[in-house]
Each structure stands twice: as C-alpha cells, then as structure tokens.
Length: 131
Image 1: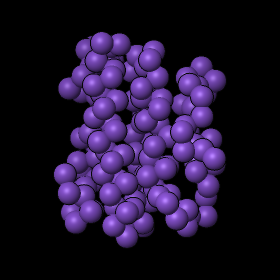
Image 2: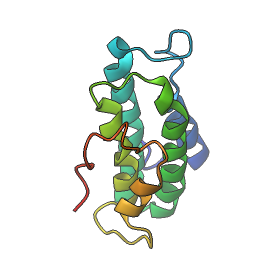
Image 3: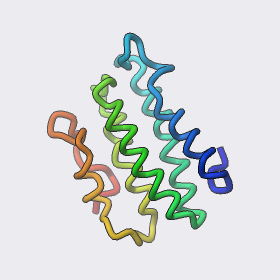
C-alpha cells in the first residue's frame, strides 16, 4: 500500500481494515494460534502510518495514530496475546506518529501511558522506541 501518496480517507479505511479482527476471530475472539498473524496485519497499519510521517504528512500521521491507538484499545481484550506480539505492536503507532523528528508536543511515552490496555496485566516491557 502506498500510503505516502494516498488520499487520507483511503488510507484511513485501509488502516481500519488492517486492525479489524474479523478475519481472525472465532466467536468474537482471536485465539492464540491466530494472534501472531493478526499482530503482523496490525503491524502493516503501523507501517502505513510511518510512511506518512517519513513523507512529510505528519498531521495526517498524528490523526491516524490516535485512531490506531483507539482501534487497538477496542480489540486488545479480544486477542489471546500470550506471546506479546500485539503488545509490542501497541507502542508502534506512537513511534510512527513521532517519527525521527519528535516535533509533536506530546512525547511518545506519554502517548503510550494513555493507552488503557497498557496495564500491568498486559505489560510486556516498554516498547523498543522508548528512550
């Protein structure tokens, strides 16, 4: 997906599709056997956001980062993330939004801390992007 050049509505729609658990869910939940594949798909959404940041579309990346964190918050309780694959993806939207320049007023750690699902129960250590 070439998000760097895409229309924002199109990119938003694709990201929403990538965070959808439907293709992986049985009875409304993603079981352990499918969690890694779902996390890989969610990682594609983060890559799309990152491509916006690196192509100079930081404002679009900011909006989509907030939505991505919301999408993850909505599905995390329905994914058996025993291996922590989705938990590691969880910090990536904030990193993608900040990119290498960190021009946003909110720090990446602050964005991570706001995630209600980053609780001690689901905590797998700090994301790799934290300083």
